[in-house]
Amino acid sequence: MASSPLPTAAQVALNHLQKEHPYSAFTIGSFVNPNGDKVFIVKRKGIATSRKGYANIWLRASDKCVVGGAEAFAGRGEVLVTADGKVPSPTLSPRRSSAQAGTPSLLDNFFERAKGYNLDKDDPNFPFIIGGIVVVVAVALKVLVAFRSVLVLLPLYLVFKNTQPKDFDAKKELKRVLRKENLPDSHPDKPKGWLGKMATKAAASLAGEAMTAAGYKVRHDEFLGCIRIAMVELDLDGSTCMWIGCLNKWYFVRQMNAEETS
Image 1 (cartoon, rainbow, N blue to C red):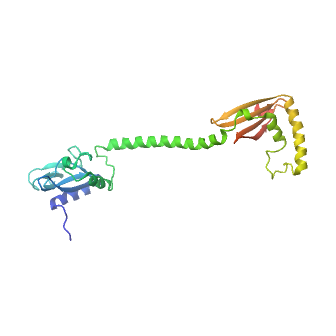
Image 2: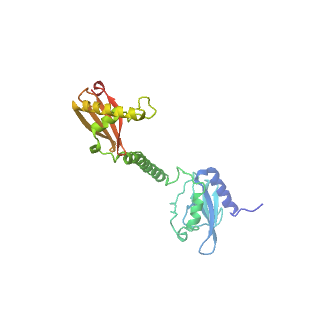
Image 3: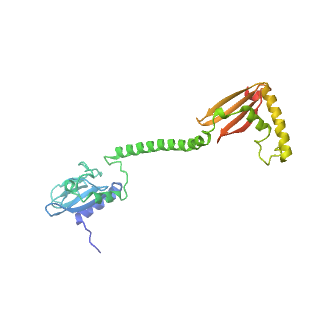
């Protein structure tokens, strides 16, 4: 069976930390200090908990604190992790150089921190992490809502923008409706054949002139800043006809009698 790379006392301390505080991701690493000595250091989520390495790290039996010192179980040692899993000294920033922190390279720290990172409410940075997440989510939602609005309105704008109110000719559009041009080819009232179409066209021309001779009013409305709607109020019977403009063409929607428009 292969021996542990850590001294026995350090391994016992590590086992204790991982058992009692599994979400803090404690580890014990080693490096060679400037004097050429191999020393050990406790890390939480890949960040060193002290500014130097220790020749030995052990679990202090009297208070269950993990401590470091020159010789295991000799003296009180320097507290690295308290019994409740807190680090008494300020946590080093991962941006510090390896010479200042007494730790391996930043790249090593990055990969170690990336392994199974979990939020810990005891982490001194916990409120800042949660606050940052809230801000990022809020900004992302605002961007998403704005982007969805653009996705909805942009096609409408591109489809309807070219149809202008000045292009609407009330008499012309009314005669098209009377010629039943708005009906699909499969509709039974759609004129069939050349003779049927010519007869319907002649009748529509006369009816259109008669309907508009009594007077009419044209009103234009705009919806969502791009959808053009034309309304023609006929004085002859008080009815109102509605068209919607799209791709340089006006499409008949419906005719409403005086009771519906009042």
